[in-house]
Figure 1 (tube, one colour):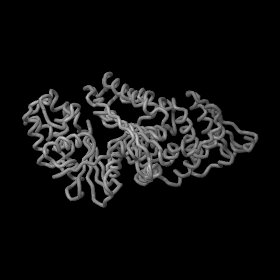
Figure 2 (cartoon, helix red, strand yellow):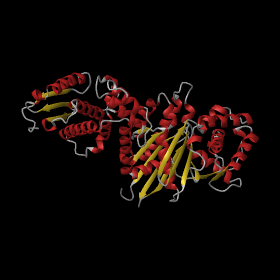
Figure 3 (cartoon, rainbow, N blue to C red):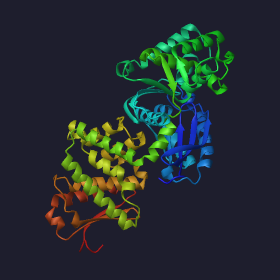
Figure 4 (tube, rainbow, N blue to C red):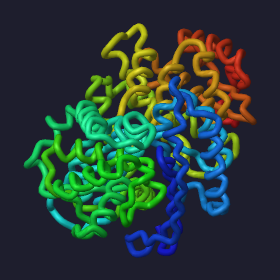
Length: 502
């Protein structure tokens, strides 16, 4: 990456939407601009788990303003992610579809563990180089992430549906503070995060760090009331609880350093942080300036490392589900060859790997469901991918992979919404053809096959004599032609006079 390159990270949080623009310089990222808007989308989830029209509109309006600043940024230099509220919302697809159009860049809903991994990257790069073992705590609007790591590597991550907005709405709906409400909120948060006590035990870290809005807001208040800057201690935290009780209501709370935008969610934030302190036996929490946005920027700088993370994830999944590596490699090579043939015929000039990563990974994982059932392995494989929290992948990417694995065989209507994307459709065709051509679990004669793509009208041509040599494969290809008749992408299969004459 060249010095001076501008990068942008967009964080669609439950409480606020943020845009950070950084400039890459000599291995570091210098902040150029930072925008934050209190959208409070997390407060817009109704009892049915649906985002209200008003909450969606607030988000769209904010993204329209962000889009003006991002105009002209290359797509590879912008990453936009959504977190817990859109993980929970049953109508998140409605919001994201329009949000993508407004922002002009794809927005990915990331899983809790992936959010935690990125948070640690941002925190670690904001701290001085050290071999200390770190615990990072990030309390957001509707989720709390806990991470153990050392240097720039996260070693254990966890995400819990507990946050300042959610807890304030549930336990302090009118902003009223009482001793019983504070105690109930803290006990409830500990109950949700109870398993953390077994995985984040005292002695497994040397220093604890807090990141993001809640920890920063509390540290700012404490520093202006006699505390050490950028530090939260157990004693100071319980002093703050006493201040909430003395005020009786958030509207009456008068604390120097408490921003007006934080007043409505301070009760939830304080009780969740108290729960973390007690559960993990923390005595002191230091503030790290980096979090999710900085982690996104670092991932763009370290693109090769990010890719390595995903490759390692694929290797781990193959091992865990005892994938036949020989067959996976065979299908992978065949699908990649067909994909490249189609691209070249269509006149594509950019490197294939920029487009075919999903196809490559789906090819390697197409049989992960076989450990559960050979008959319905595509259904089980799709379920595993669609419900996994794995490093390096967003939920959007995992849904894409799951859809490819699901539709590798059988009828295509089960992935009809995905077929609206021509790129996905071509990936799926190549995967289906590859599994078909490798059905005998031996390498197909790829030098006798050519896939052509002419404005999404596909044809597979085979050399003279191929049909007679491989009658079962030819029969399966004729069935494949019928499968695509019910889609917008006509597919033909025929024996050519000569494959060389392309």
